[in-house]
Length: 300
Length: 308
Image (cartoon, rainbow over all chains, first blue to last red; front, side):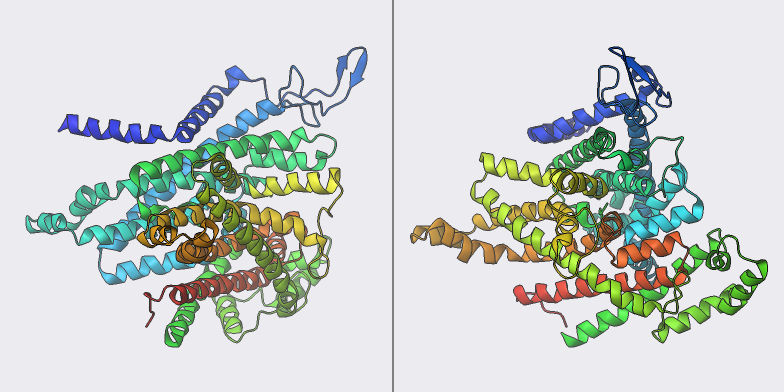
């Protein structure tokens, strides 16, 4: 039994590896994750202010353009943008995984319940998803963070709140199609309870689409966090966020294009990498059900 | 079909009640006193008190809630806290501008996206295909607000070709930048979907037949492949239009486009409950209408689907 599982895993990996772009995506994400994890050992202090710099007998004022000391240049206070971007990546990655984690747990659970339990439970949950999906996402997320007060945790809560209905719908569809399978009937015949069937038979059989949905939802979460922070509804100043760095740099766009430019470029590369990995995963799992999920809601 | 449409429209009503309820609850938890906001920071306490009584903010919450629902049911959006103008009149002014922007963006992305998808499919695995698919993946990964900034600086500040933001009457030069920014991600998505749909059709027997009888490639593409690949493309355009409406507040705020997204954003910043709820309701209704239209169109191009 064990060998067959391993064989499955290696054949999946082989199929995944065939798409070179997906492997590049994994590499970039690993690199970014390492940078973010070991940020204090790699970059200088992102809060270090430097209001003047002597160079070739001249006194320079910030924002300094990219140079030997500052790979991405500095902001108006002489703070190193590369350092701030690395710390911002930390926020982005945490938010992306946390939001997706929370919304997947909630969405999978509610989707399973909705697809498996009696009609009125299904109706109730589906009407709630209808309401959530009718909201313009960014406005709802902004309202929720305005209510809860901005900050890392509230941003995650707000984004998870807008993200779970998609997952619930997807998992519900899967659960409903699996419900009619003979092995479910067989399990019921030998006396397995609903929850046991759900967790032991239905859930493992919709894992493919769930994994794809997990990876496909991360870019949206990362972009929405950046978007919220850009508009001042997200992560607040002492915590660096790519969105708020870009927002700060907006006013210097003509004198220091590197200031809003580089953080956005890094954000784009991060999102692109996660998207490429998601595409690779779709090729491996090939669940047609999940393919529409990726971009239906990411709008930032 | 008519019965189906009517039933779908009736289904929107409970969703709208849910939307209004959620918004009402959220905005009442929000810190900040609308009466004080209306009166201004240095207002006399008596003035604040008068406004509070005039607007009915001193009534119990459930009375305010039911009153609010009743007004909406009668089609009365009320007056904006911020401008004191009837919200309906504001909406009539801002909503068409949003539609204008969204339609312009969607048309642009459909034309360019399908065109790119056709080229990619025709030159499958060639360098053009790879390049187009790469651009498509990149377009889907741009954060809209950053893309907007970069395009602003490129076309308005450095090249001085287009105005950075604002609104001109009709389809002026002002619409180009926001519509293009909004269109870029959709364009990538449509190119991908078109390519995938075409490749699927390409394997069909009737394509081989068409080629075998000596039709030129361009003609096979136009007469046999595109029409048959249209179903996924049209449904993607529909869902994409909905996605576009979701991204529109961001674009409108950045480009100072006076549409409903910016209106809603301003309302949220000002804690203007009636204006915010009215714009959310209008946006939600338009999303539902677009969804319905897509489903009907779907049945029209695919005769195998019938709604009863």
